[in-house]
Image (tube, rainbow, N blue to C red; front, top):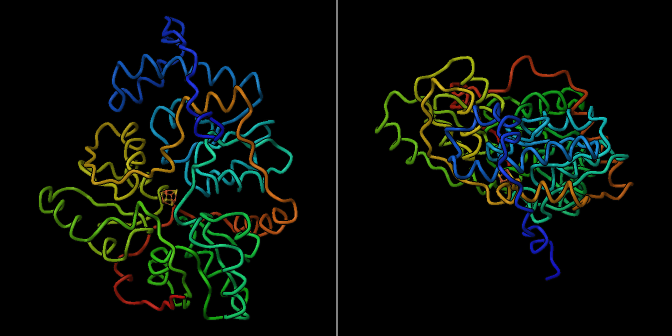
Length: 368
Ligand code: SF4
């Protein structure tokens, strides 16, 4: 079989669950034992030990997104976090090889920021519904239609879209970036693409007008206010934290809305007795591993693209140096400027949250 899927499914050698492996991986087991069964662990622990050995041998680091499963996130991730955090870490990483435990646009971002390093993704089919919703040609047409307006692009986009962009943003800094760019350009409207719901939720936090695109995250668009109200009726004491890629009606019935980093920060600092994270399932699992005093209800959705990344294909990726991600140098140079302008902004004082009270009072969005 010739395609990448067949390669990605090549079985790993059966590493043994020895006393040495058990001792080496004991700190990881202590974190993930409520999320992984003992039988699964006998297969996962030897792979974790082998991946960590291979990282030293190959001078490699693994960047693991918050939506990775707990055995990846806690077991082999050298840097963990949201897109913004990983972008910053990619730039600082001085290893020869970067393995992106995340989706393809994230690996492209790492390659853009680290052009001299080898960037690998364990499965080339790990895509994203937002990234595939828009092309560079679409952005050029938008710029023709709205001359003089700055283009702010969510990092969940391909390199060719970033190359057409003035400044990138993430859900953790989108309001800050929109306001900064509007001030810098002396305009009262900004193009914010491609996530329609993020754009609508940002618009409720600022007096800057927003021109938006109809891209959606297939994980977050599936949540509804009715789902949340039903869960709240069943567990009235549960605190509901929602991601801003969800529809505005979901944020309106939630107790808090913010980026993945803001949600993790909320749980760590406020230690709620019971919580619901309205986002991708593994995010709740990873936060739960470090918050034993909090009960997590699970009205979550899985991202099928993130779930293509497994311990086995990370192992194979490191072992065989596959699949290498490349970006055309001319595209990379322009895309790097847009990502760098975001990174150069002062870090927010605290992880971004979306102010749900103001949210009910101001909306100014033009959807393309
Ligand atoms: S969770 Fe949504 S935005 Fe993130 S990779 Fe999956 S489809 Fe894309």
